[in-house]
Length: 395
Image (cartoon, rainbow, N blue to C red; front, top):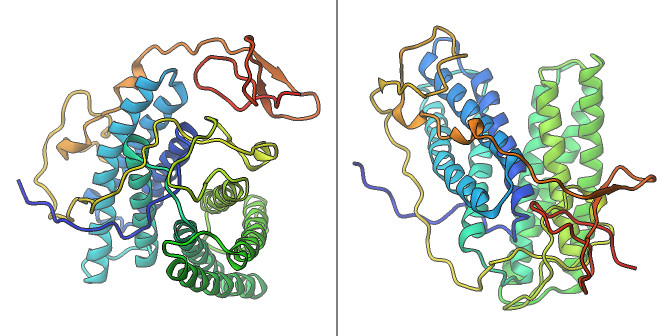
């Protein structure tokens, strides 16, 4: 068994996760990463293509499990299984990146795209760590670091869009390049704030910076949405799949959600927090009345250096286990696969019956609201069932 290198994470520690909704979001992102990687690999690299297909199916299995969860125990089991698969996927992405940088692998995946996807996998790993062992102590510097991570993601998106557009789309390319420059500048400004605010609370200039970031993210989100619509209607010339356009648009929406959480005071600059619990703010519009919510079980503790799996040489293939799911759709129906790709998604076959949840549909909105049937002094109404959803604000 090879030794594992002790190293610090390359991405900042994320802010408090939104538990189930956060996990579901990132599982889908990882699932699509596997599909994008597979699509960009050379057709003669069947082993790598099979591995990417395996990851796609494993994350698809986890996503199905996430949709069927009905209690905290199953949720924590999902977190554990996701962590194990995610570490393998992170190693896979870094291995492909190193091979491309050493000119040992061709294809159509930009090296920066592989690095981009590896950074997001690393961020997801940290979120899963926080769900199990997290803390709520935050500072202005921490919020700045969170913005630095996401601003770089947005800048990368603009660059990918620019390079995947047909050269004839001059106006769209110019717009994408303008976004790239704008987010590069915001990224550098965020790094400056991250340095200046170490150990200090927020200041007025940083709050203004957050407003500038929100305005920029709203504009690039709308640009991505317009590009997605044009792709689906065959009105845009380029190499961007509609799924990729939708993928980057959803990530912009998620960044807006995080910014809203900051503005609504969910992330407090205190050494401890006693905040109300909300489990499922699933969209920006649902946060309009949100003032205070946090995640149960968040501990105020320090974090030591983390251990990441060291990129390793490809393992010899072994005979596939009978329950492995990865061979059904893979071209050629290979008889051998990596042993660690055996299906961990057995819960897909479990018969999970969701508990009946008393809901009320607001006639003026598509938001599903949960009604509490018990007397409570809480600010929001809950059904008492799992998973809890943000409900009506009490009168």
